[in-house]
Length: 279
Image 1 (cartoon, rainbow, N blue to C red):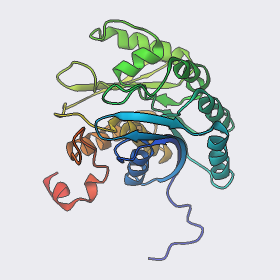
Image 2: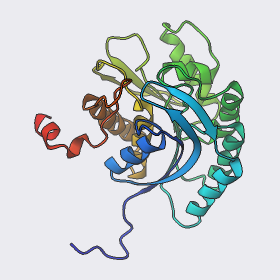
Image 3: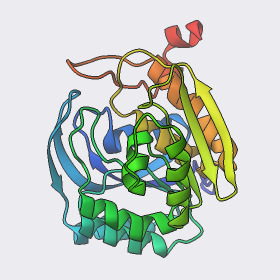
Image 4: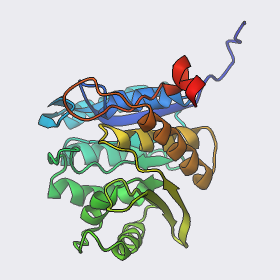
């Protein structure tokens, strides 16, 4: 097959995220998810980490000027169809990234507001959360917090078992300026996982998924990047969120456990003949 030099190629998605040496989460998870969904990932490293599949031991934030230089070099060379933000590393990095994405108001911004690792290791200080609220959320097309992250980010500290408070969290987050909030139920105490997409008019859709056994390293990164990929392909928000959930659930159903900690989602489940045959 001959490909024309004028072929635009796959959609380009620029990721701002930390590096995860295990490949389970962080920028490595974003790269695999975006590739698995037919996009070409561009990456800006915001922090380096020391971690394994059990938890994060140390985070080293990259200098904000260097983060900005990484992004500007790529953006001056290539047009992007979406931005995806994960662990940003520092308040200075958040400010630098907010300034960069403000120059591209028509590009969707997907934010995974990572607060802690699966083990509970803190990845965002209160100062960083405040900077996210002030500088990033007003520019976000959609944010994808789990229930714990939604409560922290909205600063509504209620009974974690009170599901009604999640609606209040969504309203609070939407009032900050973001267009959509997808609150995932992976951390909720429910028989099934219920993920709810909110817009400024209320609930847009609620999807129920089988709760799989075990815990997973990088499920949130996978979901947010999958949403970014679907939006980059031109889907509307409701369809993009459903497509991203379906992709993510399949990666979790095909997950593997290479270490002594959490399972890692298989973002290339579709390429494994045995898994394809079983599905």
